[in-house]
Length: 195
Image: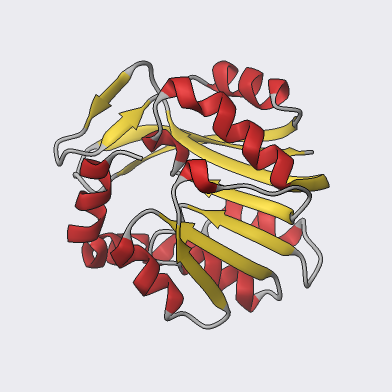
């Protein structure tokens, strides 16, 4: 994980939490929760301040929330029903653990060369038939934003290929654009899939 990116999230955790407060009303999150039975085991990868994890817990899911940022984990751990701990993408391990994995705007901070191995580990941790959600920023190449965070940008067909190669079946894609923490409006897409 990129240390400069983690430092930005540590320094701006409160501002990010305020921006992400409406995430609990995200249609993709509502759909993801609705696709899982109560009591399902879910991994919130790159959980940030934990609003999505808390919403999942409110809906009766058993949530493990992880983030590389100390400050984000501290915020998430304070929310009801959320078990949060610090971990980087390459520390995700295990087999057939999760009924669902929510990877919302987190894997875009990993280098492109590492994406296949990260997806492989996540699919291994996913139970057969498990649900998978990923959200990324649209584009090409790798670069830092105005506040120093590292980003890898993807096109939809590239990610569809990566998910299929990892053993997932893609079931839906949505697109949009929103301002980020650095104030820049960026296009993005989400993709839902199952093992």
